[in-house]
Length: 534
Image (tube, rainbow, N blue to C red; front, side):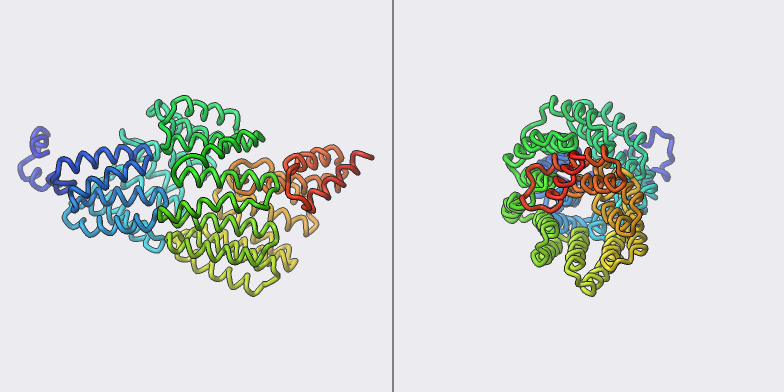
């Protein structure tokens, strides 16, 4: 670089004072280790983190002081949910970072502190120092944008992602993240523009089409989404790669939204049969969502149990905690409240091992809902206070939605409808501003509060919001189906016979194979028969 700088007519003093480090100080003195590192980064950029890890392990085996390889190992492990492994390798990178120049030292510091919500402020400070030196640094801008997105400062996130967009080496992950933040603020046209640009830059990558398919699905344009995912299939990504898994997973999601549940189940089943914990996890969680959509609760837990076994073998704790969260949700729906409390505690235990505070918050939220159902108001409010503490440490005010929703459920249980409605509105306002991505469970709570207070017009509007939503209902198939039943009753109350029949039929069609003895199914059948006999 010194020889290059001479051609820019810089003085000897200017050249000597410029940032200039020998390449071995930044990377490694071993050409072989450097080759493995470069190859690993290629896989990292295509989101194939397991293959990237393989090459980084080879790099550090040759050069145990290769700080940037340890950093890459940490990031890859973090991106697949292996937080303890991320922490271990990031600590090693930080330990070795003293020998590095400022750019890499600040980058590793920012990455290290970003591993815990409690130190997000230190992480942001480190990335800012990096960007003071190198305003266009791709990784610094990308990672800082991700932090801002996590703490609910979407417009700052967009600013830094847009800086990465100007870079020639912006990855598909960068494009996808920028599009996601635009959707969070409701800018679907901008998100589409970003993804179309990504497709032009990476026309031979299945991920380009997957990202566009996801966008159309979240916008409720399912026909267009299906076209894009079939283009991803046509590229025939290698079996076992993330792109291969995502093809089946995304097509299954689209098919479930269009009502093609048989073919959606086929795609999820295909995932369950593939090798690797990620495929088993995606396929099994998808099958659970399909079951809930169809009113099948009994035996659904058994679908997830293989995930626990596979995850324990590979030392991954977050999938186990996610399974217990799903168990707790099913328990709540079937009224097995004591079991729900146990499953929430198990989810919290594995979330602690996984160092995942978001799962801890979700576990506490579900635990509080179980206490509400048990009429244990004091315990529910105590749980809400525990939630408040966890949320305070997260540096993101948006996480208060858990607290406000739980308090709202307590108020609803006590028939304080006005206060409950206020709490539910606050909870929804703290979620993403994207109207397509509101938590259907929260919207249902608001609808129930309006209905209980006698305001059936507003209750109707909220239930209609659920049945017309896209991504917000994915994890709440039962809520989506039951909203047709609730709308049927409201329309019947308003003497809108045709619409009542239509919605009862839709509900009963979705739950035609539901568990026997569900009260809503029996009631809907009676009401439908009565309407048709008039």
